[in-house]
Structure formats: C-alpha cells, structure tokens
Image (cartoon, rainbow, N blue to C red; front, side, top):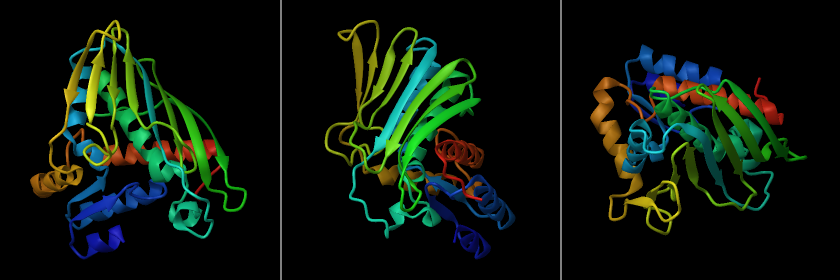
Length: 259
C-alpha cells in the first residue's frame, strides 16, 4: 500500500516497521524517490523532545564513554492465533511489532556516541520463544555490539511482563528514560534522568505538560515534507533501511525468516 500511495503521488507516513523485510523497505523507498513524495517511517517517539535531549547529553559527554545500552519494550496479551499479531504473514510477532523500538533506540544512541546520526551493529546474537502453532516470535532477546565497543541488551515480547525503559550506561554515569516509547500518553511524567557517580547525584529533565506525542510527529511531517524525508534523530530513509536490516538479522537468529 505504501508503494501504491507513492504511485498515486501521495505523501506517506508509514506505520512502523515500514515492511516485514529489508528488501521490501528498499522497494518502498525507491518508489518514494521515483514519484517524488515524502516518506517517513512512523516511529513517533523519535520526534519527541526527550529524544533530542538524550542525544545531546550523550554528544556532550555527560556520561563519559557510552558502554552499554539497555532497551525493553513488551506487553502481555492473550494468545489468539487467528489474529494479525500472531500471524507471520502479516508481520506478527514481538520483534516486528515492538522489538523494532529497542533496535531503533540502540542504533540512535550508538550513533550519538560515535559522532553519527545512527550506527549499525557489527555483531548480533539473539534468542527467543516461538509459537508452536504459527511460528511467530512471542518473546525475544538480543545482544548487539556496535563500533566503539558499545554493547546493547534488548528484549521484547507480546506475552511478557517487564518494565519498558531505556538505560544508557557510560564510564562516568548513566541516563534513564522512564517513558521511552509513549511519553505523555502512558501514566506518569516522562523523565530523562542523568545519574552521575551515585544515586544521590542526579539531574532530572521532566517532559510533562507537553502536547500529545503524535503532534510532534505531525509537525515533523509538515516541516520536512518539501525535503521529502526527515533528519536524525527522526527516521531518515537510510536510518529506516539500517533498522530493517538489523530486524532481519534478529529474526533470523530466533528462527523467523521471511523469504
């Protein structure tokens, strides 16, 4: 449908992940180029001001050298094999549904730490639990290594209870994002907490009282529609392709392959 929209000359804000495999994402982006339309993968959290704050803290050396990135996103739902969420043909499973978020933030943070808009992993080891009936991934975890000896620990699930947070650990402190994916939607005040040597030495950046999360995404589309794509830390086309390539890798590691 994204390709059909491009062929019709329509600008596109495409739900994440943009496709179920990297090769399909390439085709969508080529269609956007060919028909000269705006295209953005709708990772709405990337447009929220807390993400720009995290990137600037890392770039300014607030926690020293970035060592480890921890990112989780999961929810616990009943098993219904007939629904899209559990159907591989329609992009079901944890990695594509919500695991794409931890992948995207780890690549963004690694990029900020190495002086780039984003970075690609050079090593990935993954494991997971697959549905015996449909073959989709119910729970998955991965360890990634990025240039600069940065390690990322990611986990996701559609039948898993865990706290959804992001933590960036460095040589001189750490950054905690309390509401990384749905700030100003989930209960509680979104905060970026900079913790230095001890738990008592911290700085808190609050993001309460802000417009709705999706309004930032809409503003990004409006601002950059003439440029046809958005810059980092939002999802540029190159960033989208890198994310899809990493998702392909993780899926293969857990035994889910889209030919």
